[in-house]
Length: 232
Image 1 (cartoon, rainbow, N blue to C red):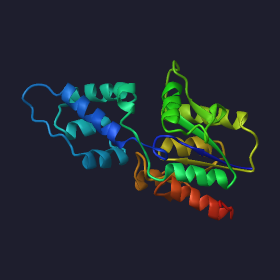
Image 2: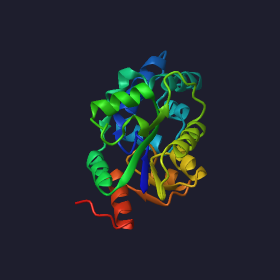
Image 3: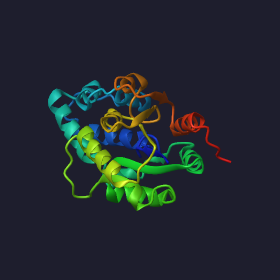
């Protein structure tokens, strides 16, 4: 059996609008006095995020002072996963068709994400993804669980997934961040990085995925060709 484990945000969900709106909210909330503020365009903002520019630096480039930048970074962490912003997410074009194609090709599918369970379950229900990810194929942060770091938490989720899921001949992880790649590689899982998420090519190549592709459809096409799997 072949297994494909995918992150949710990035390969499946386009989070760019949510992140940009949270950036605007935090900037307006933290800006004080007569200091001129320059709201970055979405393209400028997303380019900085994908290049792993720290939150404080993004705030300072937008015109806030260092003290306000610290407030900005803290508020952003508190807000970016708030339920009031999650409905800004959109499906990555072609993601559902890619999951259907992988399923027809015989891949066992699982999702592994830093979303909390209530948020993952809501998105799966809203986008009708239960047919790909039933409850026993969802690995995520529990609602009241205290988070540490993305790499540490995601690695723990990966270890649990490997222990609980049925044995597979080959397992691949598709993700869009260093946390996805490090977590998978630490469990001897092969990795594909996608550029449809929150990291650019240069950032992703630092962690040496086996392949960097544009999006989930390209990742699935690569795997189906690799294993010569029919999907008709």
